[in-house]
Figure (cartoon, rainbow over the protein chains, first blue to last red):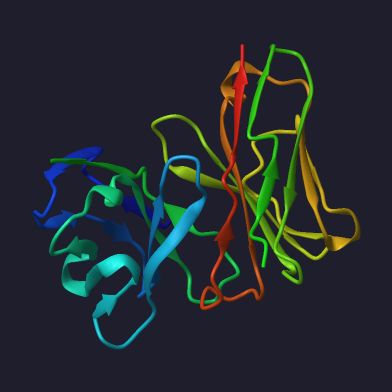
Length: 114
Length: 115
């Protein structure tokens, strides 16, 4: 069965510092991988996705993620965090066929301090 | 273009009562999904409509939950009777095609509290 692990429930970083949010998945083949962000009062917004090809994917808001097949990981990174990045971040995995549901991790809440 | 909307944004009811949540997908999106997030847990899939038909309802917790999508437009999710464990945030999402290359757009969610 597919599963997603986000080991960090809550992370606090200083504004301007770099960020890495961890995501590990369990899936029999190469899945489609996603990162979503949820700001307070908002729905989930897609940050980036990986389907195939280049293992380093660029997303919106200056985020990037790297797919590492050997580690079953898809960590999200940002070189310099802004206060507006404070939100909850979700990693998700989906079967390439699209006919099975997305499986989400439990989320990582990011706090940004001055 | 309007995004996915959900109503109400919050609902507080007592155990045993009935609640109906509504989702309006993006116009033209045939695929509509319901998810739920219980506090501190992962977002879990409930069911998937393609137009007015239930494509997959494997995530529905029990028969107290009833989802409909009359005419293939908006959808409702009714919980009757509500139990304490039904508390959580219910998200709706829609997409144009049944393919993850087509983005799922999420609504802001309905926070349900059962007392």
